[in-house]
Amino acid sequence: MSPGIAYATAAYTAWGLFPLYFRQLAQVSALEVIAHRTLWSMLFVALVLLVRRQWAWLAPLLRQPRLLAVSALSALLLSANWLLYVWAVNNGHVLDASLGYFILPLINVALGYAVLGERPRRGQWAAVAVAACGVLWLALQAGRLPWIGLAIALTFGGYGLLRKTAPLGALEGLALETTLLTPLALALLAWWAGQGTAAWTQAGAADWLWLLAAGPITAVPLLLFAAGARRVPLATLGLLQYISPSLQFLLGVALMGESVQPARLLGFALIWTALALFALEGAWQRRAATV
Image (cartoon, one colour):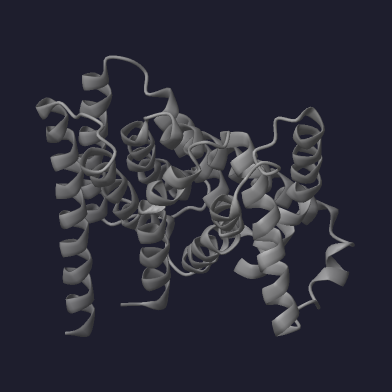
């Protein structure tokens, strides 16, 4: 397994298990959870940079306003994605959130083709086509525009594209993004405290531990994702992404009591078939290259 694929697989597995974490913070509003994620992620990444004495990138950054603007945009996309996802999980829409991440690989393939000039192989296009049929079937079964899923897919698809093309490394990029968001997070936390509506002012020891854990729990998968995104094509990255929503789907049904109609299972079966097709095509290509 190449390092890029290994990093991306680890990131997507961690994200697939996120509902278990956010379930512990169901009593905290989604926006306050995002504020804490931003603050503690920034502090965690800053600590890592301090230990590694990795500060040389900061000075040239001040002379690159375009990079700051792009990082601000990626930070906004990331925070919007976080907010949508946490709200969905804490309001009984884990399956809708998983649908968003099922749609995401199609967005990634389209962005890679349209923006980066990537050319997926025929077998990869076939896998994408099968997955697209599965997503379309799920949308038709829902009987409405899957706005939660579409919004999650578009925000993280845009974020992935910006991170792939950014000149900063994974650690530096995340540090910059969370630093740009931290003033807003601190202002919101202070405002809620002043209004007497902040969960953090009334939290017990257990709740505080869950909030503080948002730093490493958020930062580590993002660092793995950013490292993987820089090493593999967006088409490959997109199809590996199905690991996360598959785990979310299983958690939503098995642990969180969300119901799934038998007809919807056909859509998930098509998506899992696409995963198998993609894996087989990749194995065949690697074998052909070594012959």
